[in-house]
Image (cartoon, rainbow, N blue to C red):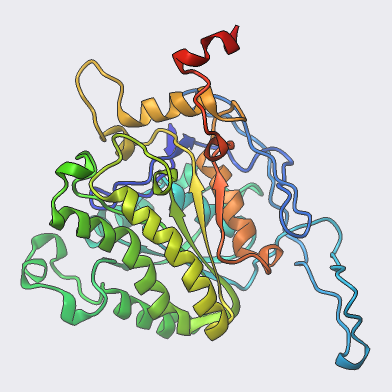
Length: 393
């Protein structure tokens, strides 16, 4: 079974990554970031049968900073006191992941990485697919994908209905209230969910924005309507702003908000249209501004991960024409041919990177776009171009 790496329902269908099931956190691998965390990416085929790999997450004491009294502080000292090798322990931390509707995408991979480090996992799910998701959990449909490196299974403590295009109850139009897909549900706006989470858990430590939607994503920008453009911006960018507005007050100091973006925010990616490239650019710009504002107001860090392309069920539906490769298949082939690291990317590579950013190891990292794309973002020329043919001989 292939593990898709974009949390996307029919409404949230714009992230485009995947990985085979059971490709858990590359064997004994770590990545180096900030205070010496080493990270290694797994390799293999995105279309190959699943393989079981080892665990890159160890539960141990978190990083601690060398403590000094104000009077004896040595301003020339920059040393961190590490509790042995760089390790992550999120025991006692609560993580809310917005945009989880199955086990096939980024949101799930991030949740599993955080759960592996001991975090309590709660999620927000789009109302029209809520019952299907809850039934899948009850029937054990996601048990295989829930397995953690220590042999236990990830537990989702609670699932909240969440439609992130609505900020408050007053924003919900009658057509949604009367829609049978929302029948029997209320309290699904961002503000209402934040209040429900506060009532259930008090404070949270980690907020993940793993959702997006572009209803006209297959249209070139020149053919995109105003309605489609603004819808992409609302669901894919402003939803992150609203989430932090409403959840920020219930986040513990030192917490982290994380979102997911794509290289189309800064480079031309034909086929990724409908205003989605603009929405991702908004998201990255807002990440920097929110890092400043939320950092000063609540002591909360804000970051985003820009991940490379991998095949998912939702991504496979973009630009699908009989007898032709899909948009995502072209994107994967291009990445494999041109990225500095010629290896496949899996959704758990993003999960591991997210775990670092959301942990104490990333305590000084905020306002960044972290590329997890095998280095494709750094390239300015296409190695597989006909004009470069003599360089490949």
